[in-house]
Image (cartoon, rainbow, N blue to C red; front, side, top):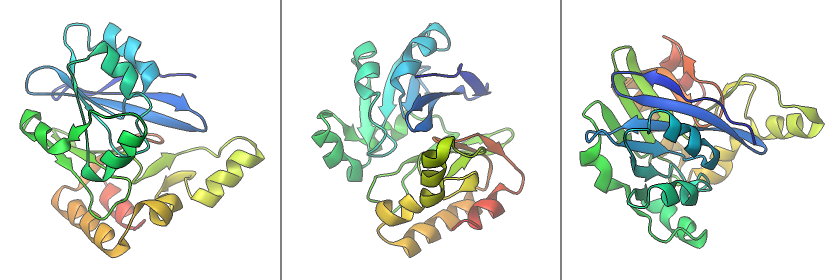
Length: 230
């Protein structure tokens, strides 16, 4: 399993990101500095722990492990072993499936809101089965959206006939996409979900998208591009 080095996305807010390969996908972990100086880890990848501890976590600790949806849970135990006092939180829609996967001490995500810096908002798209959660950070360069499976941005075709076939069937690229899997299995009411995202695009229009899957995308026309996918 290969991993990338941690990259500082925003120095003022202390936002870091790194990717790891969890076959067949490339996934991303994002770390956000809290008011306390500790960190929240979004979609914790188990193989990224050591490099984080050698870098930005050297003089601080992880206080929150945020599970962005029911499917991004494989790194929880590894990070929790290193930071046993950290809170593990997820949306209400995720709790049942996470417990079935052995994560019994997962709390409500609402408890972390007072711990976030004023520039960072926690958002929960409505009408999802997978319990998707987002973070939106207001930076000096515009709004930064941190999302999990709502949007993909793989810029290359998958390797091999099987990989390319799966990419085509699931609608995961190449390019900025909304996976068909989102609408097939993860959204209960498309109209409610799409209307909510369109409202967010108006209220907090992003200039940068950090998806769990694919390349980070910065574009002045990003709100229009995202709305065009809905």
